[in-house]
Length: 393
Ligand code: FDA
Image 1 (cartoon, protein in one colour):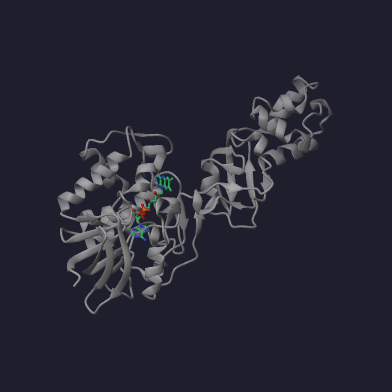
Image 2: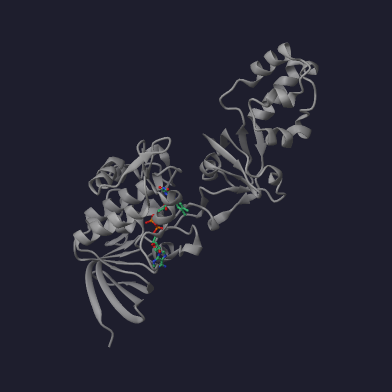
């Protein structure tokens, strides 16, 4: 006979959202995860230093089917609440850029902090646990699991889906939350990779792989002014990761390679001062040399400045400030930082994250259709939504 144990709350997933929820859900809480360690994405995030929030986080930094859904949770547990907890635990941190806060030492400190708070709250954590079946009962849920090589049955009043999105399957990401939401009759919006490098099947940037420069990148009507990195397979860097969440397959992107200059005025002045110069050398103070070489044939950069009419200079400047490219795809879930789409937020209470149709079922973190920009926003959503569900249970 299998042993059955009852908990008030069972949380599936010991990631950022699941751990935060456990901290607030009360002592009678069990957190289950199939991984060997909790918070694996926290551990690898931010190059091992975890960009744990953003000082300027606000509702405008998030995407989702319902542009208002995330407002309530973000307002009730803000970046300052999380920063307070980090400070209370004596974790040193710094702002890297654009309000992005990173640990001075290691992302492992954030995991240790969350585990410490979970222990204080009296939550129980079972790792290396496979969830084989979840069923609704009259008063709650029954879960069949395999833990420590043993089959077990666990029952609970409240069940929280916090198993994240599909990004980085190598690290154990699965679509369990989506499958369970569908099993319970909830809608799940289409999912796709977000914050992900874009690719070109002809590998046209292989010769300038490693070249980086500040740009303004635009896709789907949204622009970001951050660094761009050319890669062997296409384009990466913060500006590209940001627009990847707004880009749809088959659509062009636009790059302004000179967002901080007025190239037309500059080139006209250069023409007056040194008309014998080639366009390529005139542009060298503005753009990396390898990029100029790459563009040279297409844009005719070997021509002399003196031979360029104003209209020719205008055309060149348009090409440099509105370089239109059609990516063939993205690197996909293999390297994506997040999954766009997920459990439809129309089916969830924005105050508590509880399902409107299945009482006692909660969906938090990346599993829900809320996605943040690059820069600490996704963790902030995990903290805020985890807190919303945890305090409501
Ligand atoms: P998360 O993915 O953290 O946790 C889900 C948990 O569920 C995992 O522990 C997993 O093992 C478990 N699980 C999954 N399927 C299961 C199953 N079938 N059975 C049992 N358990 C299961 N964001 C940010 O704000 N700042 C940053 O610096 C970064 N950096 C970053 C780097 C990289 C490389 C990636 C991939 C992602 C980021 N992110 C980020 C995004 C951030 O990591 C992400 O949005 C949050 O971790 C989401 O938190 P969740 O708790 O929702 O899911």
